[in-house]
Image (cartoon, rainbow over all chains, first blue to last red; front, side, top):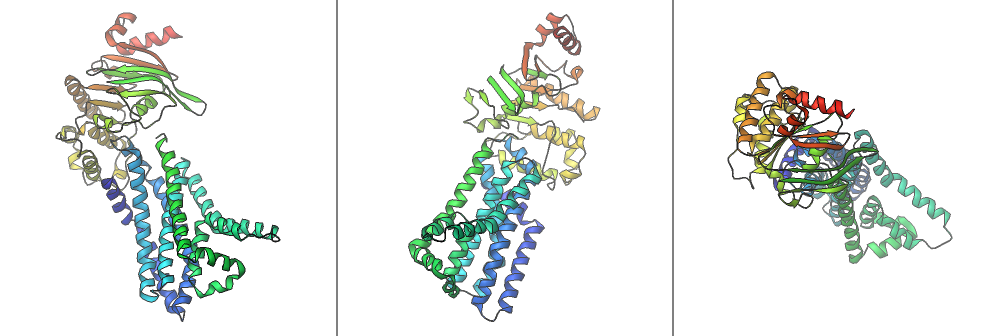
Length: 255
Length: 237
């Protein structure tokens, strides 16, 4: 497995898009920290960009990469290798290189300008989101043979998690505003990794005071150490379960 | 060595393999013959585990291949259309395959075909710049590289120039004499005459017959494989 991971990693790290993505993240974070007068304001602006761009780039790059490696996959499937090894190597290679880009592009500036708890949580959440969306991309890519459909599916999943999900939750909130929905909100947030990461970072910021009553409920639940561990467990669960689903599909796939 | 038991595979409504049962033994050189779309490649791919049958099972040396993956180290496979990562060079592809198969294979690699084809002069060339014939040469060299016990060749000479296909045929003959199991599909029946010992004839996913070449010649009264197959096909209609 190490050998194949090595081939995948060297292939991706030479890719110009990955290098461009790293430089782009680096430019954004450096300029934001220099534009805003305080580091915590910089972090807030950075958070909003991370929650949109990092999942989008991870999901699209990974989907396209999986489709472009069709030949590589086909070549190796006929060799004495476990399919599980091959698929895991692709996952580790993609997640590893995209996470590395993120850590260089966002992690280093954050450590330089805002080495606070909030900063570290931001780095942790961004890395987890990267890995989750790589798994989602591999799920979308294994599902259909058609490249256009696969990329469409992964963009739709991104759109769902970044926009549609919030819309649905808001709709439910307005429809049932006469009922207590605090528990529902906490459970709902577990079904969207982007929302959960946003909550985790915002809770560490002063702005969480602006989130009103629901914010207080979130603070009660996720603000504690147990809540933090639960949140990390949920996000890890996302990685494991989505990757497991894609692996199961890949094991039965006809080449 | 390879036993397929009631293997069935459907792609949607199309039945690619219908209850195919075959036994292949060491030392045989088997021709898989049939019209286009008769399920030859699907059968080969299910032996390699690239296609998972809907029902039935395949064993390799007595082990079910679903639970095993190491068995593939005994197989050299030359696909019908060799597809390789575009931005790798020929040398990198060879090195990667040697790297992957090195752990379990202590046997020295057999690079004779690479040399005969003159691929050792082209190691720096990227796969995407290669012509179809050169790709076929790469596929053939990879199939023979690890001196496997079983060779599975899907249309080996399609797209090769006469010189290269002669070299390949000589190589197949010499491997056959070493007592290996060889499975070949081809539409050029005349070139199979001197190579094969057995014939499997498939049509629309069904196995029509699996015979020794000598029996087939006796049954049809034809000496040439192409005429014998033609005789069988016309009798069926």
